[in-house]
Structures are given as structure tokens and as C-alpha cells.
Length: 345
Image 1: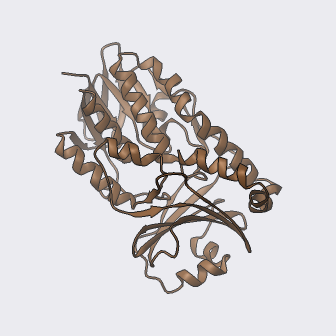
Image 2: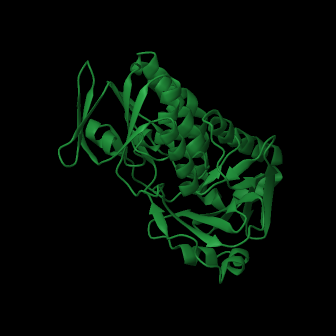
Image 3: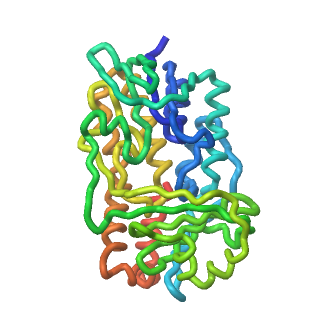
């Protein structure tokens, strides 16, 4: 039998890692301590580059096609259609449910427990769970998200401070989508992301400074305020942040950090799952080769473009140039389209 791999975190990235592990002939066990519906605050727009990875895992979750991105600021807007196949807006709960069903079909072991500590040596890793239970594995993949418990246990987590500390909110509304684009509205010191996720539901995510209010931010954009006024809430309000979290190392011995647990710049580009799935693939490949130390190089290769683009966009969005983003994109459509295409891949 292949290596036993303990995956801490049962969100999309952790479940993807488990599915990749099964296909690599390994024995994954997923340890999940959070809400059983798998929900959290996120944009839920799957870029076109995610879809082939989902299909490779045998997944085709229902949702709403996403044909491109529309950036809007006041009366100005700039649109860009994705080249080739569309992306898809998918409720996180729907995606997690589909991934869990596939994991169950393949016989993946799943444990509901909170990991409180770990020890490792040359032979393997022991995870200590709440209540005294222990899980033993040859390797551990920490897929436990932003502000990872495992990263803190390893002493590699770093929370960055400064003006780029931002927070997010997300809620769904029963409202027929008025577009098949991801809409990004610049509203004062915040951005609003509108993602159609079904024929009768849109997701609304807001990114901004600490204390941001969803309703007040929507009210800054009259068009959105009109469309959403009176729409019934389709989910509870969820929050996340602060973002701009990083780790000193993505691998410590037999423990590999994957997805948001390996560092997070900002949700501004919507690339979380595409990059997270790619990291999961590389982590499994590193473990399968018996060379976990190869993972940091693999991690840098699959995240480099994302990290550079995201940091650049966050710097601009946090500077006096913020009000010029959409006008500049309108004046340089080829550059804007190139950025969108890179993020969509």
C-alpha cells in the first residue's frame, strides 16, 4: 500500500488533496473540525483554469457559467471575456458536498476532530486531537486555511500588519442573475464582488478595512442597492480575515502546508481554489516521490505568478491610484485583458 497521508482540513483544497492522493495510490485520511456544511466567506467564482482540475477529479458541480469579469467604478466600467471555456459560479457548500461524495465513493477515511498538536520524527507524524485521540501518518498535509493551526504549531506563521490588512464578508441573495460576468465594483475603500451561483441566487462578497459593513457598502453603489433591495437572504452573513498572512516555510520535515495555510495575500484576484488545487497536486507529487523537501520549490513555481499579480493589485488598491484603476483599464484594454487571462488560466 502507498503512504498514509493525514490531511488536516476538509475544505475544497483538503478534499482535492485526498482525491489526488487516492489516484496516486496513497491512503489519505481527512481530519476536519469545522462546520459540517463546509461553508465560509469566499467569492465562489471558479476561474476557467479550475474546471479541468475538477474534471480530472471526476467532479462537475452545478452552478452558473461565468463568461468573464466586469470592473466598475462610478459610471465607468471595463469588461473582459474569458478566452475559451467559461468559469463557473458554485456555492461553496455545493462544491464541498460534491467533493465529499466523491471521497466517500473512493473510500477516503474522514474524521471529525480538532487537531491540537503534532510531533514528528524520521519515520512519521503523530497528530494529537482534542479528547486525547491520536492520528499517525507517514506525512501530513496542512490544508486548514487562513491562520492555520498547523502552521502555528510549527512556528512558521507570520501575520503581517500595516495598511494592507483587509477583511471580507459574504452573503447570498435570492435574485436572478442579471449577468454572466463576475462584477467587481469599487465602492470607496472597499470592493464588492457579485458572483451568480445558480439561476436564482447571487453571492455578494465585500473586501475592505476592519469593521466593514455589507449593507452600507452595497448602498454606496446605487445600481446594486436597487437590484438587491427586498431580495431575500439565501445564506447567513460570514466573515473572514485579516488577510495578508504568510509563512516562513511551506514544508517542515514531513509536514507540508497547502492552500491558504501556506500563505495568503488577498482575495482580490479570486484565484484561491485554482492555486490551492495546484498546490495540492504538487504536495501529493512531492510525497509520492518520497522527497517532501521538493515541495517548497514546487509551491513557488505554481504560486509565483499569482503572488506577484495579487501583491501588485493590492498595492494599487491601497494607494491614491485606487480611483484610477478602472479608467486606466479602459485606456489600456490589452493590458487589462492580459491580466485577466493570466488569472483565468
